[in-house]
Length: 235
Image 1 (cartoon, rainbow, N blue to C red):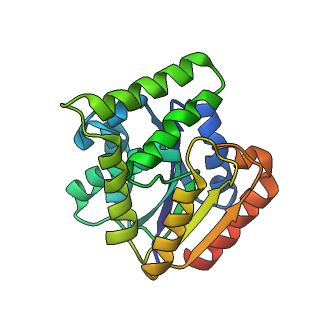
Image 2: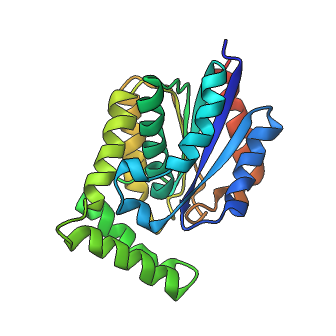
């Protein structure tokens, strides 16, 4: 049995630490250590070694001092990017990272142009014109600038690791059929891929909730589902 378990809550693109910490509080109330990572739009323009390097250094002190299992809670594709890069840092330093379970919220997107285009069009539903413009500009640059790794390639890398190399890791999905930013078809495809890979899978479709708003929409179901899932898979 591990002496310590740490949940890494990886925020959605552009989210501040305070709204993301609401998710970390769920885990702290369950007795887990929890840390928060914030995600920037620019993380998709950087190499993996440049993303979350500071967070990795801080976490490595904890990881090196004891036998630790790390549980990622990824919010949207920004959260997937943060965890993917953080895990790279940890693997470089440690050689192995113990991941007993994974939680996805409003993610992941398929590594296809259709999925990226869905997010581009969905940006019109963001709270401000500035946010919409920022997301659309970044996705357009990722698509058209020759020196950038495309968004479809980033999403495909996430997919290959989560549902390929880590195919048997138990996975919990929170999503909504009404999400206008990350299409439900992508998440449902991820659920199917996880099941095909042999993972134990649980999923909650909040149906009317908006993107990364499921905790606010139904906090009781959200929190209880996490507690039940971890009780089964993180002994």
